[in-house]
Image (tube, rainbow, N blue to C red; front, side, top):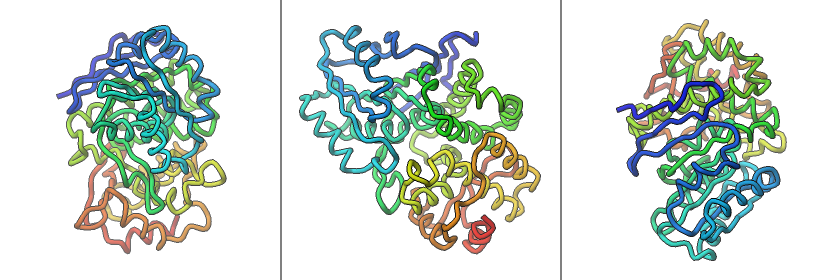
Length: 378
């Protein structure tokens, strides 16, 4: 069941994929100028109540265009805006409550739509608010970062963080549309672009060694943000994710493969107190380190050749991403964080490892002693 349809394979065309979900099929649109054009966005709005949720950084860059587009395309709509502070540390229950209060102030009815304009933090938080308001209203994801375009906006995972761990409170709530306007990436800081590329690498690591070849041959173009190459990376990444999400919408099987690098990465983020904006690692950087650790653990367990882990390290280094645990983080503390990770179950830690490039595997019963050894080697 692979409901993926590419509308036009010309590099300059808007790309179109359809994703199957328990709430019905929804479209992903990928292309430049989609926010200003507005057709795809307007088509996804059912009712007359719209709440735009964004953060202060994104609002300054893209909110005026989005707001004007909605008012032009939906002149009868009642549109409200909630602007939150930026940063992973703001993905909290308090700001989720702000979104709920904004929906209440709007008088949002069951056919209301939440428009999430921003990166993964906004997409997760706004999506969770949409999942909870009146037991679920529509959410349209308008990702403005590469990481959100290739990962968090697709598939319906929504959540907020707790001090105890990332994404511990949330719901599966698929969007009614994903509008990936690649022109927004022109305003993305280089660090955030690189962080998104870590998630692009992940798809090659777990699904397709040939995609890793493609990334390796386009490193310079990806780092330069060349539009056609970036659009290709987004479309191919979304294809991989949409395919596995259609098979496993609630992460009871293969979808867990998408967490390659995340068990380690989330532990690093949590132990650092979600301080990516003020000295710690941002999410994509933590995932890059986590993928290296997962590859090294795979080698230590005799599952994969060390040469593949070496290759992964070289690629991430070429993309100017970190590959080592930040100084000051103790292995025992990171392991404690992993025990509360949502990918653990009653049987203990569950890791996403690989049998080599392009061959991700879900592995249980990994001895904690081996995990500690890999963490200590850092």
